[in-house]
Amino acid sequence: MYASILNVTFDCTDAKAQAMFWAAVTGWTAHERDATPGHVEYAVVPSSPGTPTLYFTTVPEPKRAKNRIHLDLVPPGDDQQAELARLAGLGARVLDSQPPGMSWIILADPEGNEFCLEG
Image (cartoon, rainbow, N blue to C red; front, side, top):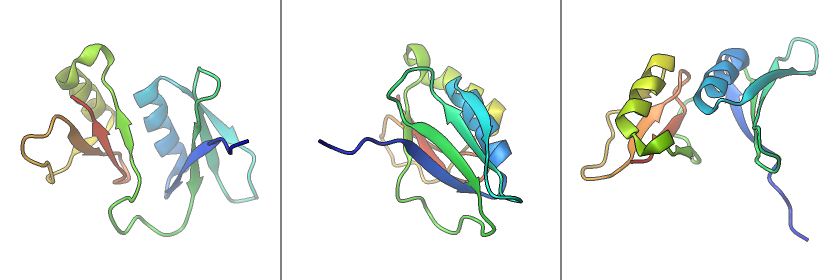
């Protein structure tokens, strides 16, 4: 027997805004979760069973450094530029640290969490 991944969890200053962003990115559904009083948590639940949920929890401290783990996205229909424009419209921004000659684009979500858009 092996463990299964249940959630990929993001610490956030605004869990609701982050959940809404990632729900729009993925097309999944965002749900507020019961948490301790004064603590907001959201889950972005995939439509296919067995896929880990994206979980967003509010923390008091801001992000301070580059993520040690990130998500890689594949654009629908392999149209990287159209998906880049859509993600930018949702609030993502392209980061300046693009390696030369790479097929992916490094972006950040509204709170600065890095992710890649494959080409």
